[in-house]
Image (cartoon, rainbow, N blue to C red; front, side, top):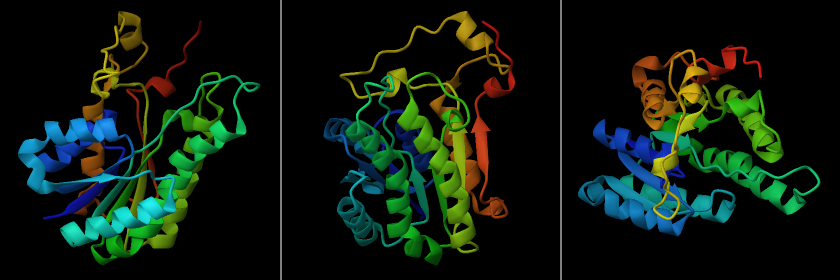
Length: 249
């Protein structure tokens, strides 16, 4: 039975991806920094607890990441897939964004995936495994006041092809760039509130709808499948065609 690590698995895309991985026969190590989200996840996946390892881990800390990797190997004996999903966003104007806030976003969103790859690479290579980096369409287009988040996601694209070239052929590395994905109902209970999506929100997508976390989970499963071993170093945009449509205000 294969083992996958997913960081930030307590909410949003990570939570749905966890369910997909379990359904497709994976054991899953969930590395999550939010203790409330982790506790809720333990309750939600109680029936699958034998296939899940819950690890409290801040991916911006090398000590945390090293211990999480060791704990995962001790528990499951192997690592076949690493899904770098954990990320945070701070939206502030340029004059209000502090250096500490900038560093916190970069440390979680960019340094975190680097550390996770560094401390799992040998285990992944032993299994001819793969890494999936969750990027974003913010890597190549922005909304105002998302400086650190956009910069971190641009860095993920470069980290992805650098890792692919450096770790291949033993480890494949790809990125997924989601567009507008509605995860409003997939947050921890204190923050979960479904968005009131308008018809025009859906209409601006050539696919005719806003994305769902399931759309990203299915792409993850496709990319980690052994039969897709010729795909590495790539970024896959999953956005319902939104970034290909000219929108005039």
